[in-house]
Image (cartoon, rainbow, N blue to C red; front, side, top):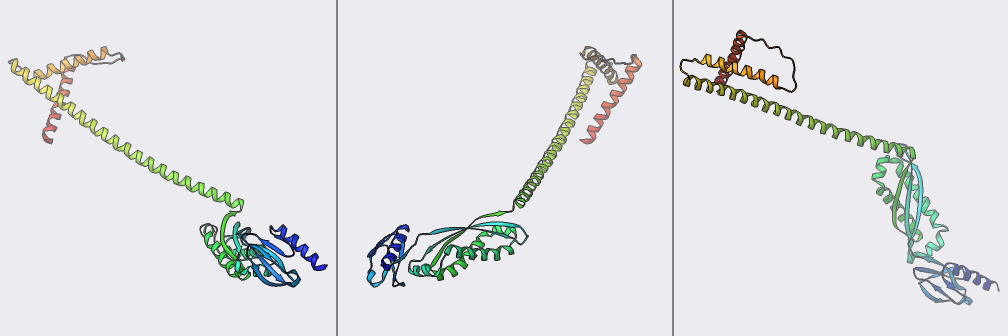
Length: 307
C-alpha cells in the first residue's frame, strides 16, 4: 500500500510539471528530458515520448527537466574605482544539457541561486577596478568575464550558459545629474566656440567689405576730380581758340565766377534751406577763383607725376 501512495504522489507532481504519468507509463513532452530511477537510484534519462515502467521492479519517472532556454535577471549593486555606486542589470540565458540532465537534477537544489551567487562574485570583483566611464565603454568585457566563470562552474552541474547580456548600468541619481550637467556645459562651450568663430569671420568679412568700399569710393572721387579737371581744361582751350585776345587765366576766372553763382542758385533752390553767409564782392570772388585754380593745378601736377 505504501509504494502505491508514493506512485500517486509522483503522478500528481508530474502532472503539475506539464507531463502525464501513471504507475505503468509516462509521457515526456518535447523539449524536456525525464529522469528514471529504480528503487531510488538513477537508472537512465528518458527522451520525449511515451515510456513504460515496471513498478514491481521499483522503476518510475523521478522527474522531468525542461531543456528550453531560461532567462534569469540579476540586479547587482556595487561601486566603481572612482567611488560611484552603480546598479547593473545582468540577464543570463541558460539551459539544461540533455546528456547531463541527471547532474542538473541531482547536484543542484536551486540553480538560479547558484548562478546569481557567481554573478555577484565576478561583477563585484571586476567592477571596482574600473572607472565609471570605463565601465560604460567596457560592459561587454564584464559580461564576457561573467560568462567564462559561469561556463566553467555550471558546466559541472549539467547547465550550459548560452548568453550573458549587460542590459543596463544605472549610476546613482546625483551622479547622473552631474554627468548631464557636465555634458550640457561641454556642449554650451562648444557652441560658444563656434559662435565666436562665426562672429570673427563676420567681422573680417565686414572689414574687408568696408575697405573695398572705401577704396572704390576713393577711386570714384579721383575719377570725378579728373573728369572735372579735364572738362575745365577743354573748356579753357576751346574758349581761348574761339575768342581772340583772351588768356587762359581770364577764361578760368570766368568759369569760376559762373560756377560760384550756380552754387548759390542751387543753395537757394534747395528744399532744406539753411542760412549761409557768403562774402560778396570782386575781391572775394577773385580769392575763391585763386583757391580753386591752385587746387586744380596741384591735382593735375600730381597726376602727371604719378603717370
